[in-house]
Length: 372
Image (tube, helix red, strand yellow):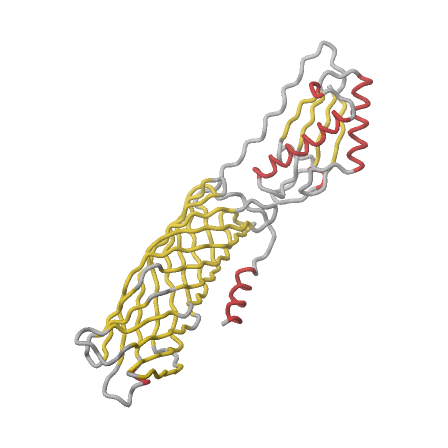
């Protein structure tokens, strides 16, 4: 069981890392398939009156790993939160039973047999999920939800009591409320940004007991199950129905009127990927700009931050603002009055070197200092 669990977990984590993902916005559909591990369940026979000579008849039911399918429709709010309605189908084949029966003195029957029974769960789950914003190609997410599951169960134990004239068969479909916890990750396909690969783990627990009809020598005995916990691992696809709108570039700052404008002087400060801290070379360039501003007597210093296209537009907008703020703060340290500094952030627009999306271009990771 531990080996199978490790293999399933490895399957979920084996997703390639290549591109950034924007927050899901609008309606989407998803479909995943994989395996499910059903933990040992407990059940006991309940005898109708008149009282039977059985004082107790209890089972520990072991299941083998089998298959699971999860389909969903959801809506992304564009800020990382998503609401999703899922429908699942999970099947587990019974592997063995541990039976304890007491008739005056207890005795235990053990057997292993493939195919003596199976459990099939299916039903809707309403989940709330959150995509965690990180500067990595894979976007991790977590979630939780509630719903209802129907559980179809069948079991035939006649093979272990074939020396007696009776048989023992349990079957039927019963329902229970359930809750689940979700951990997963998504990776957008570069050739089709609306389509993402997903890998997901779900913990599901049924919170109600289920009682099935049992034929034991035609006595109409019932079989009561008191727990059901499953671990499901799936890989699949998620498709956003409508492409996100293209963000309009930030407006260029309006030129300042001057009776005799002097030629603007520009200084470029470059940054490492996904960084906004200043390198020694950047500090020297800022010091030169501050010194020249004192000599030329400028009235305004425009500090404009930019990024390359390797992140999402929303993330890059914030990163360009942090870069511009870091340069402006250093100008103040170098003696430039804060009132003379105008800060702008343009994200991944106005590229110095034109590139496509998702490209790490050092020349585009910059802040421009313009003396007017």
